[in-house]
Amino acid sequence: MATYAIGDVQGCYPELQRLLDKLRFDPAADKLWFCGDLVNRGGESLATLRLIHGLRERCVVTLGNHDLSLLAIALRKPDAQAKVNPELREVLFADDAPILFEWLRSQKLLHHDEQLGWVMIHAGLAPAWTLRQAQKAAQEVERELSSPRYPRILKNLFGNRPAGWSHRLQGLDRQRATINLLTRMRYCDVNGRIDFEAKDIPGTQRPGLYPWFEVPGMRRRETRIVCGHWSALGRFAGLGVYAIDTGCVWGGQLTALRLDSEEPLYIAVAAEPHRKRVPGAD
Image (tube, rainbow, N blue to C red; front, side):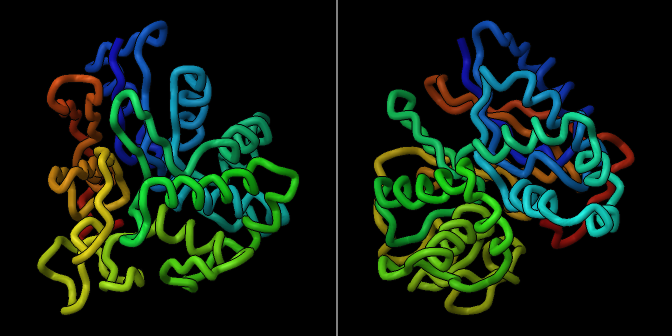
């Protein structure tokens, strides 16, 4: 029995199939963790969602910013939905879209397996958060997304404020701050305020910004963290953080990380030849 975390798929269905073959994934015994951003830009988001949904009993998913955006678009009127890119339109107008969206809304923002000693998120954690505080914030949003109240949070999803965490935040501001941290964060300042524009490799950011996992004085968390979201960072291991968005959709690789081995083990497949690397892509 093996447990693998997989980086941002973003609709790269052929690569996901090849990766599962390379892993010799056995749905009767193995488990898959997906770091989020299952959809958009790879060309085959509907097939990707159907595959992962079909394996849902053996999968854990943490939602990414592209997944949440798709759920928000699904609330728009059909004429507005018709204006999005063809890949997402295929999902929005599929016969099984309601089933896929209901399943997607029930997925997590943070997953912790105490026995394995791993946490999975899509993007980052507030420097001030303990693991318990991060779990509590994530669960508040997860409850809203899986409840009949979900349109309220999805219709108010977008916005760069609040850009950081405060225990004084309430309501939609608190929920949006949680979403921004867990699904959009790369760099922040010492107070945990996110810079939403900085996307390149560490060392290129303006003074006063730090990768979210290197902020001076941040809380120590006695667990390893696997995440995606930051394709420019690529494969990274340090400070207890393992980043595995290796930019498949931009011509890089689709990467899996075996979590239950004595040492984390990377397995990857190359992107399809037609995918082109885009500098500064997210």
